[in-house]
Amino acid sequence: MTGTNVLILKDDEHGPRIASTAGHPFVQTPNLDRLAARGVVFENAYCPSPLCCPSRSSFISGRPVHEIQAYNNSMVIDRPNYPSYGRLLDEAGVHTVHAGKVDAYRRPHELGFSEMLGADYRADGDGEISREPLALRGDARQRARGVGVVDDPFRADKRRMADALDFLGRSTDLGKPWTMEVNLIAPHFPHRVTQELWDLYAGHDDLPEYDVTATSAQHPYAEDLRKHFGTDVFTEEVTRAHRRAYYGRVTWVDRQLGILLDTLERTGQLDRTVVAFTSDHGEMLGLFGMWWKCSMYDDSVRVPLVVAGPGFPSGVRVRTPVSQLDLNAAAFAAVGAARPPDLSGTPLQQVHPDDPDRAVFAEYHGHGTRGSSFMIRQGRWKFLHNARAPHQLFDLDDDPFELRNLATDAPDVVRTLTERLREEFCDPDLEQDRAEAFIQRQLAALGSSGSTPRSRVSTSS
Image (cartoon, rainbow, N blue to C red; front, side, top):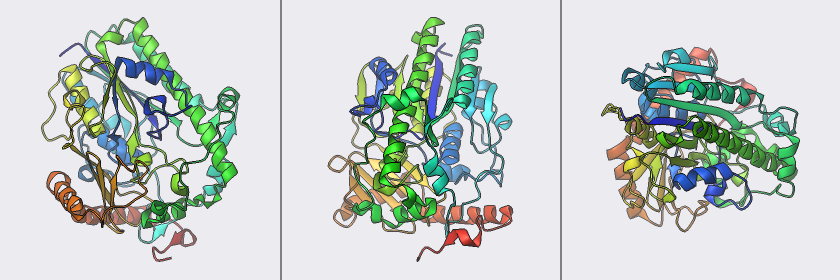
């Protein structure tokens, strides 16, 4: 063991562009800047899948979503209990702690962490999972109203922070290295804030860079997601309010990072602790008329990732694409524990800052689209193999908002990336079929189609 600890602060639904470390012109995240000055900003970090349970399950297990079959937010059918990184490190002599939101492939007490603090877990989970025909949700107006000032919008997350701070106060007496993953709900909707945070962003009730008229907004999967969520109720006025409040929620999360850093410093552990900040997935925040996650566009599938501490240089920015499975691997490397060779990912400590040949993978099989999607990102190129819609290829150096699909203009690039997808990650045709078969089993177990007849629409409508 190295004697190094690992602290991961993971918030929920944090768009990759919404932080000062990403160059945002006015969002205030001074503690992310503080962490970045001591460490590394990974500019092109991707979650395993842009949905809560698949993303978190993949990270905790160290395995891709299709391997563990954590396709969506429905937990009606148990998955195999793959060893979590918490269990593996606990067995290696590391004290492992998970605080807050779980949303994983097994129940909290089955995951094998040394401690589970304030674990949130939803039993059967989501039932609106039918893809063909496409389930429609009926809560769009409720979500649209979920914005503005309330007295105590962060009550649940304050409890999570209290649990985390309590552990840090007693962690110095453990006599062995520890890891702790702190999971906050913010900035996830509803977008409620305090008066102070609302006022902080007065005059910043802006609009997304591109709306529903953009070409990429017309892709069948984008249209599916807007139908599924009913986002046409998000008027300009509603959109402006949600974005303003969202910025306040991001700043509140940043303040929690500052509290954790201060506590590590006060307890004499900062210099021997790897601290990572990331999110389970991004947030579309009205871009292309889309909200929340579930899209493979970058604002949904890419995440903030800043890491500092032993093994990481100071003030460095890494352009090379990375995955949160690399963060999983980094935790093993930081504490000096052996990692099973069948897990996915390479320790972040070993990633070259600008490797044009490295490729990373993400996938989506969840609610809101008629079929699965598989992403491979290499250098400037991002390719989406869409199982039930046209494929997409973007040159992110020239087109960071993914406005121009080059799939028909660059067939050689598509061919090369498709080969890498199949050879290094998965067979997308096979995995589309496996996912759909599993979802049908889930729907049968739910005892219905996952939605009422009134809440369904055929993909041809």
